Length: 162
Image 1 (tube, rainbow, N blue to C red):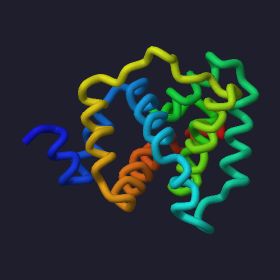
Image 2 (cartoon, one colour):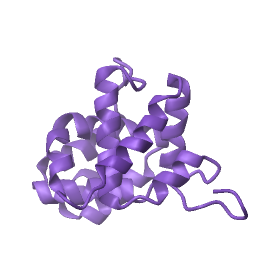
Image 3 (cartoon, helix red, strand yellow):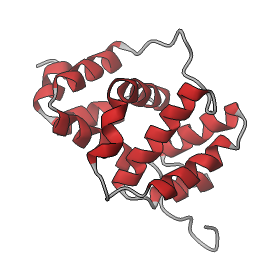
Image 4 (cartoon, rainbow, N blue to C red):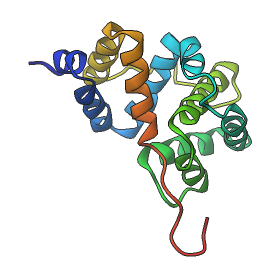
C-alpha cells in the first residue's frame, strides 16, 4: 500500500505522514492546504474558535521582520519550548490554532507575513499527502488539518519563565 493510499484510507496514517515531513515541508503543506480550502477552514467550527486570541498572536508574528516570522512558524511547528510565541500558541484550543494558521495564510497573501517562495515545490511525499487530502471529504480534511496544527506549539516553560 502506498503512502497515498494509506493516507486516503486512514486519517491517522495521513497525520503520521504529515508529522514525518521536515518542518519546512509541513509549513509548505499547510500553505497549500489553506490556499485550496482556506475559506472553509475558519467557518468549520463556529463559536469554538477564539478569533480575537488568534488575531492577537498573529499580530505578534506580523510585527517581526520576515526572517523572524519564518523562524517563529518553524519554532511552532517544531514545538520549540524556547520560543515564547510557540508557548502561547501551545495553550490555544485546536480550533483557535486553525484560525491562527488561516490568518497567517491571509497575511502571506497580503504581504504582511513572509510569502511562500514562488518556486517552492513540495517533495513527492508532500505532493502525495496533498493529493490524498484533496480526495477526503470535508470533515476528513478538517480533522486532519486540526490534528496537524493541534500537535504544534509547546507548553509553558519550566521555572518562572512563561
